[in-house]
Length: 176
View (cartoon, rainbow, N blue to C red):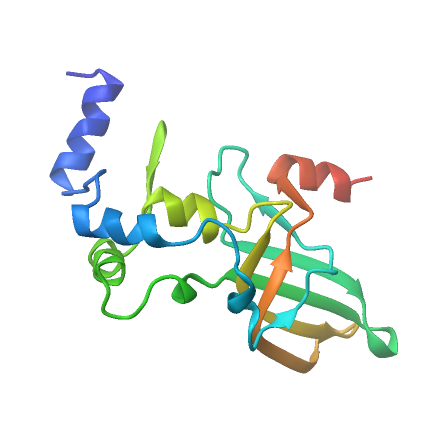
C-alpha cells in the first residue's frame, strides 16, 4: 500500500490496460518496414525540403505531429501541420487495426507509456522522429494578419523533421 509502483500496477489492472500486445499483433508489427520505402512515395507530395520540427514534452517517446512556418504569398504566413500517416502501415481490418481500435489510445503514466500500437510503429516508423523520412498527412494554411486562412491544402506527403523541441526549449527560443 502507498508504494507508487503498487498504485501504478493497480491502475493498469483496474482499467484493464495491457502492456503486452497479442502475438498476431506483434507478428504484423514485425513485418512493417523500419524506413520509408521508395514505393511508399507514390502519390505523395515531397515536402522533405521544408523545415518541419516537433514540439512535445521533454519525456515524449513518440512524435505524431510536426509543424513548419514560413513566409507565404501576399505577405501571409504559411503554416504546415503534419500528422503521422499511421493508416499507411495499419491496414483496415488487420490485427494491428483491431488492437488499436480496442485500445483506443495510448496511456501515459509517470514512469512509462503504454502505446496504442506496438513500439515498432508508435516510436518507430509512425513517429515523426528527426533526421528521417516519414509519411504524413499534411495541411497547408496561408494565414493573413487577421488570422483568416486562405487557400488551404490537405494531402498525403513525405516529410523530414529537422528537430525535436520540447516545450521549455521552444518557449525560450520564442522569447529570444
